[in-house]
Length: 88
Image (cartoon, helix red, strand yellow):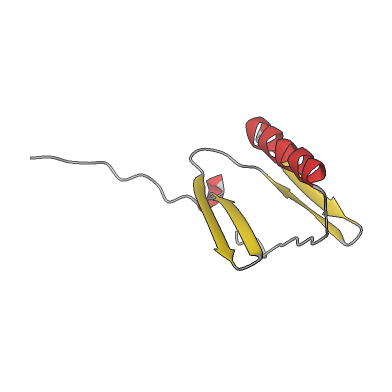
């Protein structure tokens, strides 16, 4: 069974404290195994489980600063079955 691609995107200006609260909510959601993102335009539910891939990048260019945090994982139904290892 193939699920259709779902996506959610939100962009806004926030102060540092608001961003801290959003990041805390993300960490709590990861701990619970349930992340829900929503705004007036839509909603998406994600269920992080097992090993998650983390990528952090930081760049500075003149006055522009950027930090990107990417967390990804495969859904349980999408994971490939583990193959048995045989050593002879």
